Length: 234
Image (cartoon, rainbow, N blue to C red; front, side, top):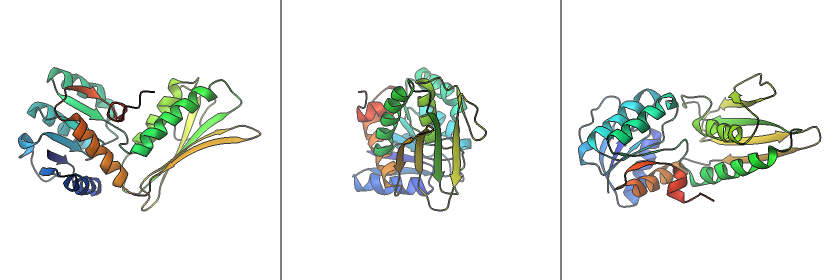
């Protein structure tokens, strides 16, 4: 399969290694200093760029009729616009705040736990996420996905970064050198705490998940998620 990499930083290079090892060919390595020349040759594109570039990258894929997998976070105010453009262009699109298999299983655990805990208001939920110092958005897209899932299944109304009120989820976002990603969800009461946690050891899990998503998306039409790729509708 011919793959266009939109964004060629640490994640782009990690994706390239996984893709080449799985027998794929990289036909474009797009950076801020290069053009989209070569995108038309791709069977699928994978975007791990920066928030300011994601929308233009995704739009270029739809205009060129190239399915696109996007793992860039921090641009989601434009997500519905991209969904509408995908449908208008009869394109194919997967956005994921995290492509790791382990994190997507963690998403399902978080959803199930949120439904259980919604019946017990003596517990107050809080979250912590830790990433490397090069990460541009805060909190992480993964943390936002976790928080929004809890909100969907509870009386919480929003997430905040500090000074949470009774109906708000506080996310403690930390940036520490060389941490690939750690996410913790804690339910505290006066007598005990319940905690679930995911710790990434390296970028390989994110890269493999993105390539698996690209392999799955090639040849399809529509808007999908990693739940479709991994068949996690349980």
